[in-house]
Length: 247
Image (cartoon, rainbow, N blue to C red; front, side, top):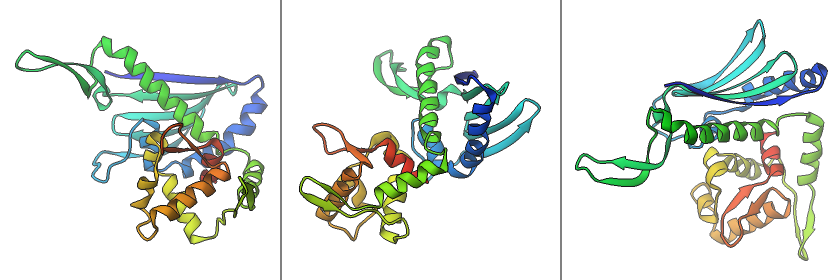
């Protein structure tokens, strides 16, 4: 069973899409890593994953296309007629996805649980939601890859010392090893899906105490790079944070 879900962005003029598309597709082929592909598809890359995964770039009669694939699922970006930017997720085996459904057991009992998607017409509705979400996550990712002048402005913004709540927080140095490691960790695909906590970062910074990591989180939040989920200890990268890390 094969299914596709496409999200189209239509431009009024071909020149507008051409100005955006050519540098965007070149940047995406170098920027999208395996854990990013997994996060687009709503999962995370496990260390023991044995399937195929990668990126490829094609030049066709109709234009150029970039494709990211993981197992039986792929995400493509291409232009049509020079006016339409299409993001398309294709799945050749829907059982690669899981969702909450009724499961019939051999003893005749039924339970509601997370299980592999069935290969039938009744899976189309939940499948459409999953594929649409993949397209939107990809769009959110590539939205951080455009216009280098905007990137320079963002770097200048987060590298400056700022004051917040009667305290000052120094800016981030992108040539500093500690700051580089911090951004590399925060760019992990699973954090884009599930968020992260103080405890989540401790496994990557065993030499830092929980209180030190708390100060790092406050510094990130003061610079607008992360946001806290209300009434929890969980954080997510902001749009600015994703843009800065992708630079």
